[in-house]
Length: 319
Image 1 (cartoon, rainbow, N blue to C red):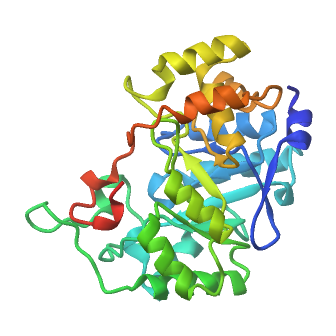
Image 2 (image 1 turned 180 degrees about the horizontal axis):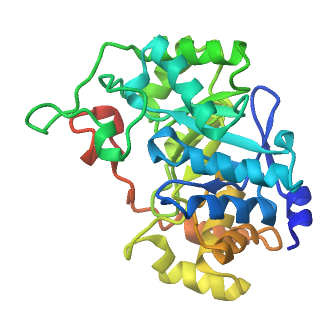
């Protein structure tokens, strides 16, 4: 599909604040230096308008440079893009929320965000606004057994994020990695409901109960790692491969189409231009109800990004 056609015809999901977010975006997690910028440029040139970032990915600056280049070249206008980034766990105190958002805006070279997410519902001890790699973003205790926490209640962090909306720093706010207990708690006090809940979601880890609750609250789900990963992931599943052959598509395209037909937003990551284009080429077919049912039957509770190995002892990350 030509870039202009994809940019104009791609599906959108309506958010609670009236915004519309492109249902297919580009994830930038695990995209390394000197490759994420090329991936972002290739994505925008191909018609993508939704780019997902995070402070902890340590590549916001390179993403921002790629966005600026595409705008300067006249490929896209800023208002046509939907840029998302995330607040890291060590910046949950009210003043640190403001500091972290300003740093992300500076790194990205933007005046405002389209959406700012709380990355995890874990208030970690403050370690400074930026770090060069992920290991330094997690404040372990002296025995390297438990994460150091601080007394920054989630309701105070959320209130600070609501202030960011009122200040014009971001148009929408949302959450990531929130499971049912913390989502219900947030719902009881939020003045601005989350615009999305970004969680791992694919046929091997379908999150049915969480998705149903999000739907009840009017909160769209954004699926990260929608392709799974590793040799045990759904890309290698015989059922997925057979369905892909039937539709003359790749297993990745079938996995993305499954999420799309469930109403979820998807943000597959790729640093290869051909994969970026492949991932968007899912609008010219639809999975039959029978094939959707087959894929729905593949759930095995298999997390490819099992954060419990990092956040030891936090019950709210139970599957």
